[in-house]
Image (cartoon, rainbow, N blue to C red; front, side, top):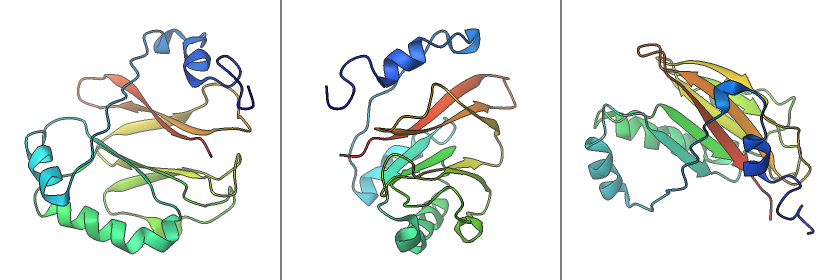
Length: 168
């Protein structure tokens, strides 16, 4: 009950209660395996033509940006590109500049921390994808969210990517 119980601020309830017909059939994916660098590359090589999403809790994007950029550049050597990259706990504030956090061939969207000092969300969307940010439900004081509607531009299929952080 301290965190809203099963109804107040419940993400699934909020999303399923949306009146927008475009989001009537939500498919929430909850699979998130752990990998070594080598197994990760091996696994991703079998999915080169698929939509791919990387989600990480970075605990300060500025402190780890060089390492993340090196990781992403290293994957490029294996022709591995993510469609979307999501980071939580960026520690960015709403008015912080993101000009030094750009990644080649990606568009950056961020939402500053508002539920916790250690919050903040950031999404990198590959330049080949059309997108727009959307609001699904009100801002909460117990979790943060950044939703992006993505259109693949080829098949005109839409999907929603939700980048969510709930502080401990």
